[in-house]
Every structure is written in structure tokens, then in C-alpha cells.
Length: 332
Image 1 (cartoon, rainbow, N blue to C red):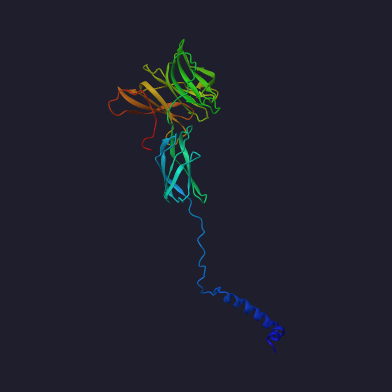
Image 2 (cartoon, helix red, strand yellow):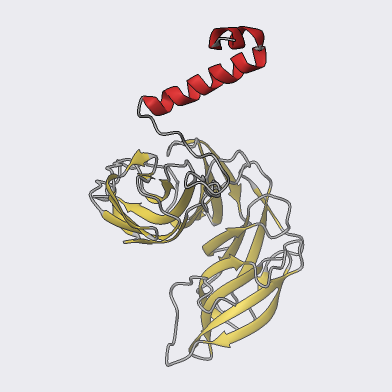
């Protein structure tokens, strides 16, 4: 039987022959036949680690202050910084960004002439993970003021405070005026929110009351700003008067009237403060006692009625104190 006859009589032999021809063809043409066995050198090995990288963090920015004209070379210190990271300051791109390492990036601040104060610094990695920080502050290139607004105030102003006295969210100015025909008054210029003022509300004091200085705060916790006035500061019997705000720019004296400063004379300044997270603000007054400068603290019953609490002589040989500033220097 011929070879052709064998091929035609056996389909299985035909398939085998074809298979052999195809396999041999690769070898005959010089192409290597890959070894796909389990121990082949073409083993792909374990898959790469595709888990996301940690998000970047910023722990410090130096220097912390720079002019809003731009040009400050910043150094951001943190972790997780990637090559190709971008940085913005106050929403504008930082130039000349250099990723020094995964913990340090430098760049040059952009100019933001209308921006002052702490700003947002954002670093964004190529994988779009980002971090923001407010550890950088823009300072003005030059400090200037626009022309002021003159406010009529009648008699000479002795003291002025700034607060929202009518509850409209816009700051107003309260002026303590000297007596006219024996009667002093508090005039409130209601602010428009643009540096100018609208109507003036006036509250007259009782005849004979001679106010010197005042402070503001919410003494009865009703959401309205009240006033604390020092009366007859130059006399032998100085008084403290609380005027409760009526949320319209006017005031009413607290029930019981003024409180006598029995242990002080010549009070010079007054302030309102909240201590120990209490809801009832205290009134603090600087003055003189027994020839030495002293600080009086008056407690508040929550309705604006005051009573003497403590008196503390000022250390040293100071005989008087002309100004009073409240702060927490020791962080307690």
C-alpha cells in the first residue's frame, strides 16, 4: 500500500501527519520551540505589589511666614512625597517644585497680593493622593489704610468698644460720651458691614453718673452684647455699672444699679473675661489700693449683677496701672 493510500485510509494518521508537519515546520525554519513545562525559565513568578502607597503628610513648613508678593523658597517636611508631586499655595501653583526625597519638597511661593494671613498649602502626588496644611502665612508687602470714616459723636468720646450690638452680624461702634448738661450717654453707630455706619442709637445715663471707661461682653447669656461702665473714677466712691443690651443698639441698667468698688480707688481700665470654662463672665478692673496698683475681679451671678470677688496687688513698686489686657500666658 502506498504512503498516499495510507494517508487516505486513516484519518487519525492524517491528523498526526499534519500535526507533525506543523511542528516540524517551526524547527525546519529555525524558530525555537518554547518549553512550557512547569520548570521552564519562562516562569512569570509572583505578581507585582499593586497596593496603594501611603497618603502624604506635612509636619512642618519653613519659613512659616513670607510676603504675599511671592518668591519665598519653602521647604515642606513630612512623609510620602513622590517624584512629580505638585504644590499650591492659597490655590495658586508653587513654582520650581523639587522633590528632594520622600520626606522633603521645596518650591517657590506664588504672588497673592490680596491675600494675608494663614493660607492653605496643598501637596498632590502623581497618584492623586493629597495633603493640605495651614502652617504658612502670607504677610502684606506694605501696611496701609484707606481713608477713615468720621462718626459724629456729640460731646468728647471717653471710651469706645467694637461689637455687634444689634444682632445683624455686622460690627457696630459704641462711644461713651462726656456729660452734656449733667447727663452722659452711650451712642452706638450701627455698622453696615463695609466700614461705614447707618443710624445712631443713644442711651442716656442717670444724671450725675460720670463714666470714664467701658468694656463689652454677654454677661447674662442672652446672646446680646452688654456694657460694663466705670463711674466716678476720679472720685472717692467709684462704681461699676452693667448696662444690658437690648439687641437693637440700646441698653438698660441691670436691676440693683451700680456696684461700689469698696476696696479700690481711681480705676483706670475694665475688661470682661470667662475663666475656667464657666458660662458666667467675670469683670476685671485695674486700679489703685493702698497706694499700689491692684487688680479687682468681680463675679457675675449670670444675670449681670456683680459682686466683689478678689483683689490682687501688682508685684513690684507700681503705684498705678493705666491699661488692662487679658491673656493666658501660662496656658492654664
